[in-house]
Amino acid sequence: MPPLSEGDSSAISPNLSTFLDPLGLATFLAACTERISFGAAVLVLPYRPLIVTAKLVTTIQVLSNNRFLLGVGSGHLVEEFRALGVPRNQRGQLTDSTIDFLRECSESDLVEQNGQPIVLRQRPNCPPIYIGGTAAVAIPRAVRCGDGWMPTGMLPAELAPGIAEMHQLAADAGRNNLEVIAMKTLPLEDRSASIEMAQGYRDAGVTHLVHTQGVDSPEHYAEVLAQLDGEIRASL
Image (cartoon, rainbow, N blue to C red; front, side, top):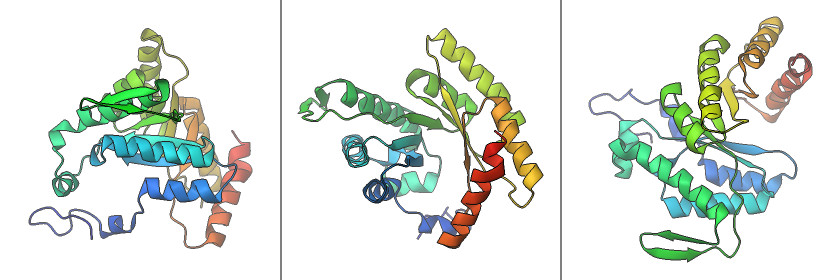
């Protein structure tokens, strides 16, 4: 059952209670696929213990032969922070410390947490880390410690200024090749509009476009995939 705001039983959609855990699902996908890349969009880092998160991400990378893509966020729902007993005003700090720890684990055989040295017998490969959230928060974090920005629900014209800003900040920091993974539902019922929107994202500087849509069955999923992998993809 999803958490509720005090005095407001409709604050959070009941549909949220159907979501599967992203790292649990990623472990399943690592086991039953061989070639595709897959990822989380997004994993809310402050909700999860740092060392346990690093171990789970490492496990997924090992099982999948490094096919995992990690979108991360800081979270915002007051009710979820309350239920977990995590201070909401520390979410930025917790996000940064987890990202830094994931990077450290991939770069050193010996790490330390809370004064305890940890020996990494199998040094993990850190997956690409894409920072979700608004431009004002996500872009500086992406430039500092991410591999790109993962905005959600924004149209190409809204994204273009932020993308330009990110690349300028990245250049100033000596970083290149930051990606932009945009998540948006294309109007697949209108072929021309879908192509035009997809091309708009490309022209705005988006490197990867993730179409977000629920499906009713494997057959429905195959239909959606055929639309995306047909004329839409060919137009790009």
